[in-house]
Image (cartoon, rainbow, N blue to C red):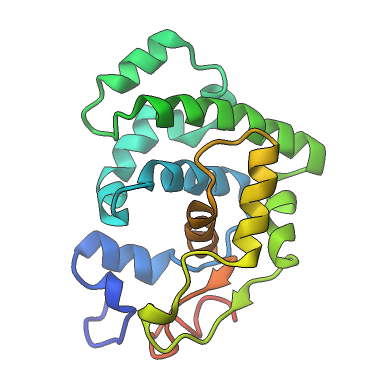
Length: 191
């Protein structure tokens, strides 16, 4: 991580934030396991900072069986209680239960569309939406695409998938390039 490079303003305060910005944020993701991970983490992030989630990411990965949707969909009350006692993650009962039900719905979508990737990328026409923001203040918290994604996910029964969460997911999964135009990553993430 070269320190002399210009980055999006949110990324420089903490090492994990900078690493995430430089290596992951905005990079198009087409791997279902990784997409599910972002879906889970973005749901847990609701009401919290992304830094908090990044700091607990490895704990989440361990607690939720590597974000394996098949395993998570089978979690019972014993596992829920174990998760509620795990100080390494966000111990929110509603978010834990939602993760379990979302895992089952995720598997259903995979079966219907052949992959979650095929389903989720339809909201951007299968390509990254490349924006040209000059400052972070210009970046919206939702768009018509995230509205449509949220509406469809909710219709399918998913929880913690409001339009703002969906837009954060789209940013993480590279469905939109929201790096500012002066950021060194803007041209690197697949324009």
